[in-house]
Length: 366
Image (cartoon, rainbow, N blue to C red; front, side, top):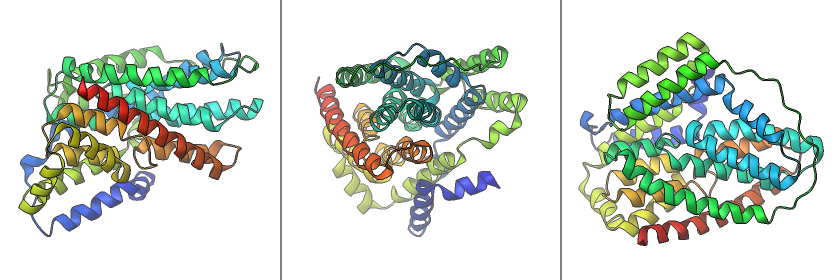
């Protein structure tokens, strides 16, 4: 029942269902338009991420790193950099849900700033998630939709990561160095055997994403592993995201059969730059996952869509699902004014959006 309630409460899924139902009055979906490779890849990714979360791998890393932080700048840097690295492998959602409460517990204990560090953790998670095909679910769609190989994908993501890290590095220089007590390392044990097995499945999944092996096998292997470790892991999976992907595939299959709409969208994404800006703008109002599926069905400019969809995760609260989780988690655990956080967070998010939009534009030009 809890799983069903969580699915029913998902705002993006609610909107997806609404527009999908409306589209059914105009056309009928075609099975060939459903990208099953993307669906199986996302299912495998969500399962593997939840296994790692159950094994507390990220918790251990966070405690180990924070035990060496002796000032506020170092603490912010460590949490943000861990968010970047974690976002690459575990995705931005799990990263935010794990690291933000941990940081806020330390911040409340020693009366440390809360707004900027939490914002940086969320931004770091989004930056890291853009680096890998599985970090962001819409990256999996891009790889599948355009049949992108690993070399090509990382040729796009590495320059974006470097540009983003330079921007973060400049921000770190302005964070004051205030002494704080060194944190005690919590005693959390990692179960090495299931962790190593999960990592092997993760590597197998990597080959599945890039079609070296059929993605169905890594997906089934991940599900079996989750059931063997603890069947309750399967209750934690974000089924609403899977249904959102399915709903948008149906919606786009329908509107592809309406010539007037198809012509209008083609005009919006007729060039590399128009695709780039269309992806960023639509992400602000409908989140970057459905935006990528929508724009991706009508454009051939894969790199522009990659940059636009990942940069579009910054800005508004619904630009990325991780943004909404940052706000929700902060409201649950912080001790400072929530309205002030939302205002300051929004300002920093849109400043980040503007700077990264300019950086992405330059990357496309060169």
